[in-house]
Length: 217
Image (cartoon, rainbow, N blue to C red; front, side):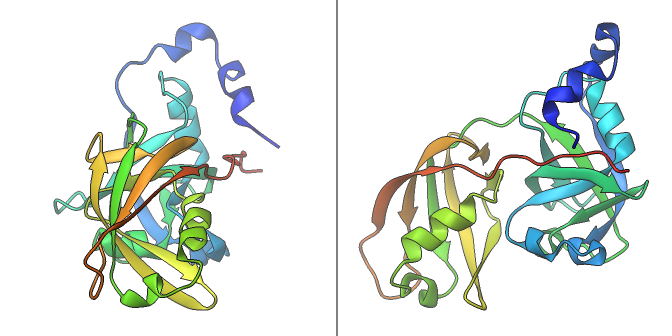
């Protein structure tokens, strides 16, 4: 299996001095098109092998993070990358991300490499009181966020639990508009959707699952 540890061995050192960020436009499709439905529980994308080649020639800080945007609107979000196995010229992403960007199957998406600070605080607003009525909503949230590499203010992230789908809006983040939540302690505050006047706070360590990136064979 190809891993990030092999990355710097692919090209001579002088090939790794490209300073401009990686930016490409792809035809986007949902991850379900390639049988990756489990990726709906998170915000990682799948890129082609040529993207890996281009990224390897640049000084990209780890982990690989991207701004994902609709080039025809002001819609944007952020993501990590899971694999480099998509067909040339295509990008696969969770369907909820496509909805966030107002993208349909076959539309063009722009992917730009970025460096994001580690998040220290996030305020969340469940779109339904049903989520807060779960007896274990804290554990459900912690488990779900392990699949997220980044958070972006204004996004409605999706949590799937026991056959139900819950949307949660990112109301606020610190220290920036978009942050990575990989291997970091994040203070979480809930802004209750309906009938709770006092916010609930707790601190939890959010550690998304280890990146599993491999070459297309």
